[in-house]
Image 1 (cartoon, rainbow, N blue to C red):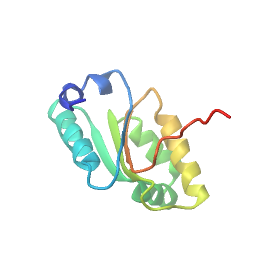
Image 2: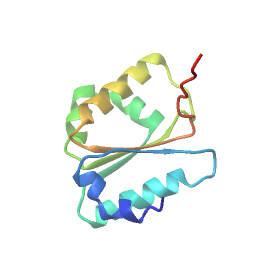
Image 3: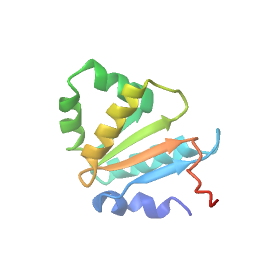
Image 4: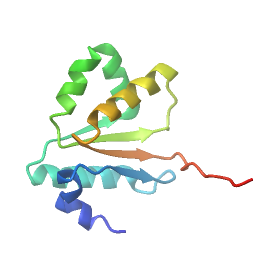
Length: 121
């Protein structure tokens, strides 16, 4: 799939999410940045965070204020989820944030984690 359809901003207008999965040096980061830049050109509010920095920011300030601010944004990009591990509490904070953004702001996540595979026994 090419990124051109994503650059129309329709996915963000419809509050859909994107997960870009792949190994190192496959272009996930650049794709997310390109889509975010196009959204900004279309007049949409977009924020970019490294996953670890986002969790750190949530713990350093009142978590609710960050969530409220990000709910006003059209698209939140969370980059490098899974590259560096963080404590279980950080995972809970990230889950809380994404669940609060659900149906209010689009989220783009880049990760090198493999999707879960169901194994029939």
